Structure formats: structure tokens, C-alpha cells
Length: 291
Length: 287
Image 1: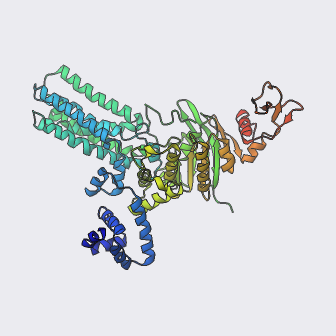
Image 2 (image 1 turned 90 degrees about the vertical axis):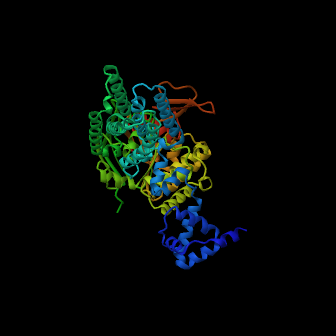
Image 3 (image 1 turned 180 degrees about the vertical axis):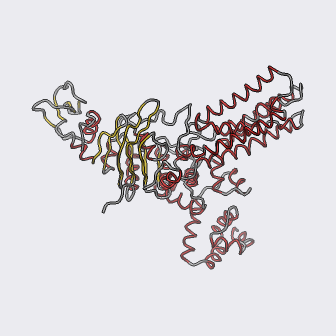
């Protein structure tokens, strides 16, 4: 019965030729691997395209492919979206992209929106403004560092530059938290430009947290920056009834300038992430390991 | 002509919270398995982390396969030739064994999917985990997890392998199996193995370093370390005062290590005796 099914469809000649040259890319490659494993006719066609020695090597690779577990749903989505499969694998190990984290982010934002709907006072989305910038800040802090990344030690001694890994993960965290916060903004009763006033502060806080990480460690750096942000908002509300400072043009410009300055500082410090000099004030690198 | 050393270190020092975790270590490592023995807090892990480029020293010079890990380029080149099994290898427990090793392979710059997967399969086969490569790490035993971490360290056939207490927590059978793997891994490459187990050193290592309070106290062959205790191990019917170590054996006699009294019944020393004496007499025992 399965032979009948195989008779109906075979690998297109182009795909087969690319496969023979080793040039076929995922996800078509996965489809070709799976089909070749089950279809003797296409295997014969493939053998006709390559010399026997190359074909043997190909079968060895195919064995390895068939042994390789199917990538998880997140990786499959990323590869289909055009992300290179090795980058997708790096992203799959980002703690924030695990289900529990996504759930936590969603709950925090839902609470912010619910509170915004319950308190229809000034019309300014204060709670979302306060919370949304903290999410990427916390997400990045929890994605990197000796304490929070279980594979930090393995990653830091790998030849892939740790700053690149950090940037891949930061991009992943922003790609998750910013759209979710955007959705939360859309759900606010007072929807308007102010509903997105958190965006530039979010970038500024994330960049500042990262720039302080080599000196303070990811947890202390994020706590300091996040605590400063909350203290600023609270103090400002206590002292003034005017429009919240971060939502004014001056506040937004300041956030943009801070984001740019912290970004430049972070880039200047990039090698500190790779040399193993990232300090973790909560559990220093070698604490308990001085054996 | 002898091959140039894989690792050359001179005057390595690292302070941690006011403690000299590594205090002026100079050494050269060549091919074969070198054991690093020492008590808790001796600085073994800190030294291994420096040699594995996981942390930079405060001072001193280091060369790994001719590269200086103090520079960006040198660090990258050294890391390309390096395999490191940390004392406490972290895992993403939701990954399968294959996914974990595949992730480390990406970190080791194996970006071509097919080549990478073939290499992942090769190293998992090499550590005898072919059958469980699709199993989640949280469902693997401690011994299997250590083998997964060793497989990851073996990716890319590194010339220099750093293993930090890989046999801790393994039962005797797992330990023997792991020793076989380390012995295989030691053929043709430089392996530095930190351990608490003198048996590991006796069975695997052509050279042994004993470290205490941040310094290398002994550097020689296991036979030399054992020989250094010759004439300092004896048996007695009663507990001898002032010995370095003394305990009653199954036969009822006391086995004593230290400076024997005149006419003592001397015993053949073991590697463990040599190790204890090396720790006791900083500088008194040399190869």
C-alpha cells in the first residue's frame, strides 16, 4: 500500500540534483531525506546522478539525518521563516523561548491590560508603560550569564563569539516581548500613540542592562536598571500630576539617546562577554567550585 | 625530536575574593593523559577554567597550541582546538542527547547541517550512546549525562581535552566505563583530567600533578609519586602518635603514614600514600 502511495509522487528532478550536489536546503532537504528513505525508485534515480563513492557518503549522511530527532515546533517555524537551521538551534536554547517564560510574559501583560481597563482614570497607560520595558530587560538577563544559563560554561569556551550568542538571544527576546506588548497596547481602552510609549524605554533599558552586565552580572545589572525605571515612574507620579515624563517628546528623545549610548557602550565592551569576565554578583563564577 | 607542548603556562595567578585560588602555576602539557589531584579548595577547577579559556588569569602567560587566549583571535583559535567538560556541565533538560550535542556543535561553528549531524552521531557513537540519542536528558542516568557531556567535548576532534572531575557521582561500573572512554580519548591528544580519585590517576595517567592551596606541589609520574612514600608507610599493632594518617585495616593492624619509628615494619606504599605525603610536605616531596 505504501508502494502505491510512493508511485503517486517522487522527488522533482531539480530537488534531486540539488540533493546530489549537497546543495538542497532545509526544509526541502528534510522532505527529500524522508522520501528517499522510503522510496527505492528515487534512491535509484539519485544513484544515477552521483558516482558510487559520493553516493555512499550521501547514504552515511542520510543515516545521520534519519537518526537526528525532528526539530521542535519552534525550530521548524523559525526555519520556515528563513532563519538558518544552526541559528534556530541557538534560539531554541534561549530560556525565554521556553513555554513557561512565554506564559509568564503573557500573564504579566494581561494583568497590565486588565488593570488599565479597570482604572479608567487619566487615560494614560501607566501600568503598561511601567511593565512593558521590564519584560525584555528581564528576558535578556535570564538568557545569559553564569547563574541563569545552565550551559554558560560550555558556551563561553566555544569558538562562537559569546557576544554574537548574546545578540541572537536578545533579538529573540525582543521579537517575543515587543509584539506581545504591542498586542497588549492594542487591547487598552485608551488606545492611541501613548499606548506605545513603552517601546523606546524598553530598548533603552535593555541596552543599559546589557551594557552594565560585564561589570555587575546580568541579575544585578537588570535589577539596578529596572529598579531605577520603577523608582523614576513612582517618584514622578508622586511629585507631579502632569503628563508622565517618559511619554513626553523630551522623555522619548531621552530614551532614544540612552538606547543609542548604551548600545555603543555595549558594542565597545563586546569582548568582555567572550573572555569569561562576566561577573555574576548572585553566584560568582567560581563560588563553590574552587576545588 | 619531541612535539612542542600543547599548553605552556607560566606564573598563572587568579585571586578570588581575596583568596589566591591559583598562585603562580607554571607547567607544560604534552600528549597523553595528565591527572590533576588535590583536595577541595586546592584551585584545581580554577586552574582548569583558566587553561580551558573559561576565565582569564589575573597575571601570567598562557599559550594553548601556540595561541594566546588573552587576545580575541588567539582565544578563538585556542577554543577551536579545545574540548572542555566542566565540573558541573549544565544541560537544557528538555533537549534530547542529540539536540544537546548538536547545540554545542553549533557553538563550535559546525554550521553545515549534514556535516554537523554526522559529527554529532560520531561522538555519540564514540561514547556508547547511539541507542539513547533521541532520549530527553532529564530521563538519562547521571553516568549517561556525563557521557553526553564528554561527547560534546569530543566534537571536532580537539587536540586538547580538559575534563573536570568527570567521574564524580558515578557508580563503580560507570566509572570503569568512563575510564575506558578517557583512555581512548587520550590516544593522540593532550588530556588534563582533574579528579579526587587516585585510582583514576593510577589507571589512566602517564603524569600526575598534585595541587594544594593554589600551587602545584608535585609534578611527576604516578610511579614517582608512589615511590616518594617509600619508607614512610608502616604497620603497627597499636595506633602510633603523631602520624599523618593512620587507620586500622581489616587484619586488625594499623596502617600508618608519616615518619616511622626505628625498626617499624615498612609496607609497600600506594599512590594514595604518595598523594597524602605530597600534600603534607609542601615542597618536601619532589620528583
